[in-house]
Length: 123
Image 1 (cartoon, one colour):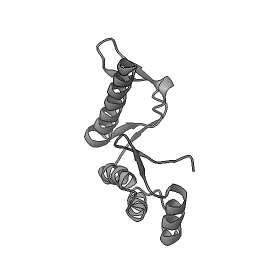
Image 2: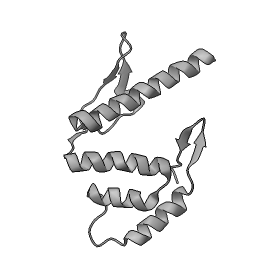
Image 3: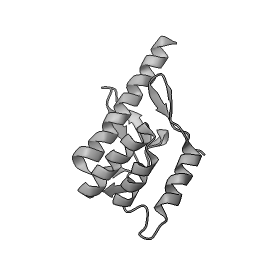
């Protein structure tokens, strides 16, 4: 059991690292990172498959995406909406207050499980 949990934590850690390298260093983001598109090599590295959904992010979008991750972890929905505006996800003329209220209602307070934010995006 411990080995399985340790192995999963290592996998999650490598996935987070790979995503952050894409986001912060290269700007080239794999937009479909589900288990079928990820493999671990014999040397313990993560490999991405199926490059049909890639995007080259502009620097301003990279920073806004990083900020949005921080805002989600902190449950700061108003700042998340501003980051979504910076990413051109929320269109001009949108009722920002309404979007913020809907996020607050749908996602509520961020709960932590073992120190990891547990945001219910399925809501």
